[in-house]
Length: 275
Image (tube, rainbow, N blue to C red; front, side, top):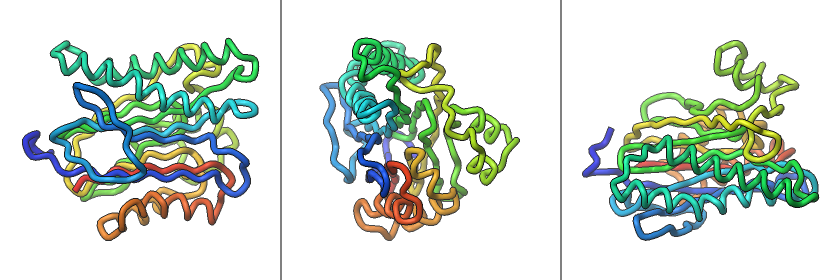
């Protein structure tokens, strides 16, 4: 792990595509810079100095009738912009609040907002969203996740690792080693969510974790559209081109390959690289 006094530079890049068969995009993604004074939305790609700000990135996949899914994912990422700075300022002010408490509370408030909207408006009834979020600080990346979007870690010296577990029975079986990647991908119940923000989820139990990173490490946040269209080895193949790639092209290549070869669903990729 890098010393806190000498953090590497963070590079981020995001890309989303409606796919070849859908009429609207129910995916959304977000990149924020956060400090004690406030929050700033970031563009599709860029570089950042970790000595001056923390960074928050997230992907969300909405679900619901009509345009409710598109609305749900947008509410999820928009709520991060308004809610996270409040918790961040409490932690920066010296209060003993751990990353687990901050992220659990953030997800709980987004969950409550989506449920409130779903109960208040007939056209939004039952809407929900997945959410996979990373909070980047010097030396450490904290993550929180609900649903079947995913977060992967691709260390500079090592193989691609799935950090999150899909909140499905199939995802649990895969994490326990009862199914291999092919069996999990072909299982008819792979998309049957047991946890989501909003919707019918009564007791929220997000997946939380912390990872120390080194220069050369990468993290991929993606929706299930990318997972359905690209095997883990395909993700690793494209991510391995990152050191030679131009700005933003790694995320674009991930999404473009999926849309060209599959394209049945909305597809979103957000890549973090430490240099």
